[in-house]
Length: 436
Image 1 (spheres, rainbow, N blue to C red):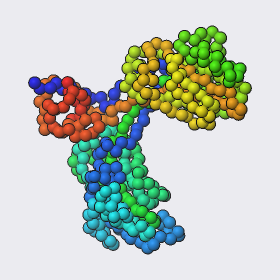
Image 2 (spheres, rainbow, N blue to C red):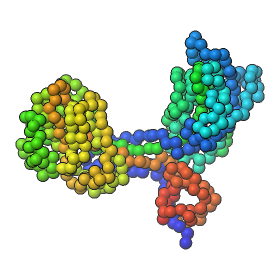
Image 3 (tube, one colour):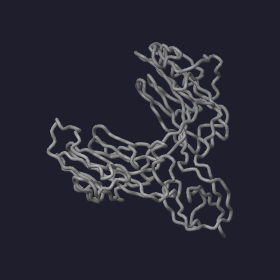
Image 4 (cartoon, one colour):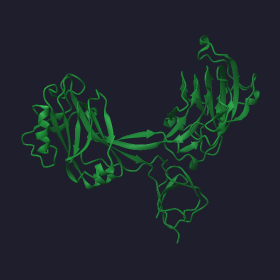
């Protein structure tokens, strides 16, 4: 029986705001070397690429020549520069463009691959590269794209089809990458015609390295549904103990439980501090008295489902000796203090399962200390979203599969037949297809 396919035109999955209203959700991108569009030597060393290169080898390094460019390829007869798509490398008036295979390094081998050694370790040099490639819409599925821009040393710059998209003014970083803007990504042609990725790297001394590549970003939606100071004051109930020794009685009474009677607690707002600093919303004489804090938040069944499929993080800036409880269960503690920093801890599935539909309690205690004191804490959720180019909207049932390539959501090629694929969401012709 032919499998049923649905073609979906939504590129980013919905992110439903929580019942406990917090800060607006934000989109975060991160680099993932598995999302290969155009391989680089640093992140995809098993796929070495070829490029036209023009190299200048200089003298031994001296401080007066630090970061000083030795030379550059001349313009061609039409006045086009080395980084422009229309440039004719055969018309260079000095030096010669040759086809070489990456990696481009001063080492004999780099990450297991034989190098084209464009510079010696202690000698100055320049490398100019023109890397030609073609892409179709099927091969540029990602909406957000990173440029791998490894370099040793600098100055260095990268151009896509004649437009500078990245540069480094000093130092070296073989791992460096940058997220392209929408305008920069739109420079990449996906009609099967030639693209030129042009690179220049200057070598001072030590190791030399020049690289480039394109990778699809991982994307996630982050929402602080129990906000911290960044989103303003937060409501809570709090109680001052007299001495640190009083913790034993407070814990025996399970002050952090969901059944605690808060009639004697102060209703107010956090964060708390004992000095005029960034955290001073409510004053807490931390040098004299410990503090207990309870924050209520409400979750729906829909919220719990989102949390179950997402990453839940507890964030806390503290001074000092904090302990945190979720619905009566201790899940986190620290010794000492962390100044103005935030300790961020991802909750385990077991800890997330402490959450219930309806009212929930996040409780934190801090001890009295001899110096300054403060506390700010909250919860944020991070869920992955799809980073695929939007496409046409429509529904097709019993559609006959053609010879078009099929990819999973990580951009991995899976062949052309849907018959052997498990039910799920895939990409074909730039469109999502749901196989049932």
